[in-house]
Image (cartoon, rainbow over all chains, first blue to last red; front, side, top):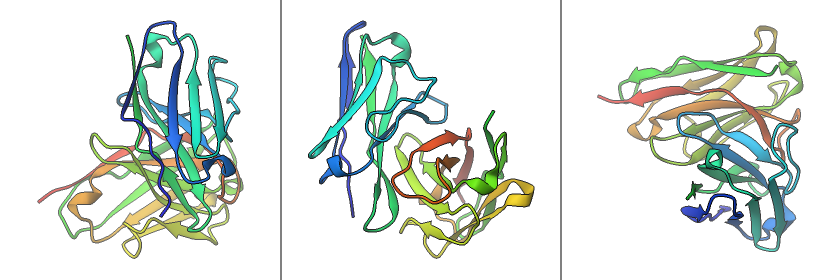
Amino acid sequence: SYELTQPLSVSVALGQTARITCEGDNIGGKNVHWYQQKPGQAPLLVIYRDRHRPSAIPERFSGSSSGRTATLTISRAQAGDEADYYCHVWDSSTAYLVFGGGTKLTVL
Amino acid sequence: QVQLAESGGGVVQPGRSLRLSCAASGFPLNSYAMHWVRQAPGKGLEWVAVISNDGSNKYYADSVKGRFTVSRDNSKKTLYLQMNSLGLDDTAVYFCARDDSDFWGGNPLDSWGQGTLVTVSS
């Protein structure tokens, strides 16, 4: 079955740039989506189809994907960006949705 | 605006059944595939099931196949998840989520409900 690997945690200084990776076989050939989840809340779509931002998401959030790695980049990190972040792809061989294990972002 | 509201969670004994509902508003439910995703306490997201916009196609994660059934009533604007033979590992918050298309594929889940907690305990 298809697997996505994310770092358990990423730390970033306030105002700096955070990068969260998501690794999987040929992930560059799939559509990758990213979700933000704050404690006690539902996930929120922040990046879809590798690099597109929903209208309500700040421009500070961006995405890229190539080869084995997709990356969510958060520029000028703010305290309000502290959350768990999950990547998601569709495994066409099984028709299943697959989520990464999630990354906890801490803003120092 | 798009709203999804789950209900039906609670405490249930192992081996028993439970049916979850997800009421949709603010968009035409019959135009979208819908998913169930769960999250065990302190754990990550796990996809559970999907149903196409007209209910004609359904897929399930291996962990629930044969025990869970997803269905929908577009006239009532409601999605369902019938859960049978529940086990301790099914304890989780269950979210319904909207696919951004009528049939799933490499699409994002663009709207989520707040979730309903299912606790399987003796």
